[in-house]
Length: 99
Picture 1 (cartoon, one colour):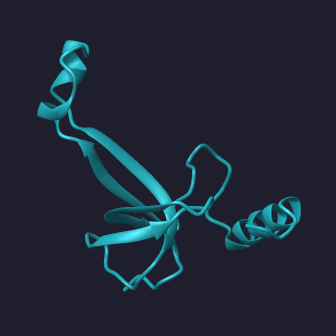
Picture 2 (tube, helix red, strand yellow):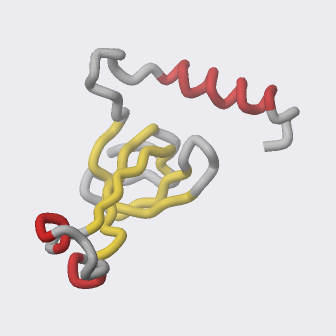
C-alpha cells in the first residue's frame, strides 16, 4: 500500500497514435504520446492503480501509479524527502507565503 502524501511517479497517455497529427515522422507517427509525472499522491493506492497527484508546483494530474519515491538515476543519489520540504519552504518564502 502506498500512502497518501508519498512522492510518486504516474504514467498516462496524452494522445493515442491515431489521434496524433499526420505530420509526424514515420517512426513517431505510430506511437502514443505518453507522459510521466511526479507528485504527491492524493489517496492511498497500489502500484498499477489509477490515481491523482499534486505536483511540486500545485498542478493536479491523473494516471497509473508506476513508482514510489522516484529519483534521477544519473548519479545524484536516491530520493531524499527533506529536499522536497526545503523546496516547499523556500518557495513559500520567495512567494511571500502566498502560494
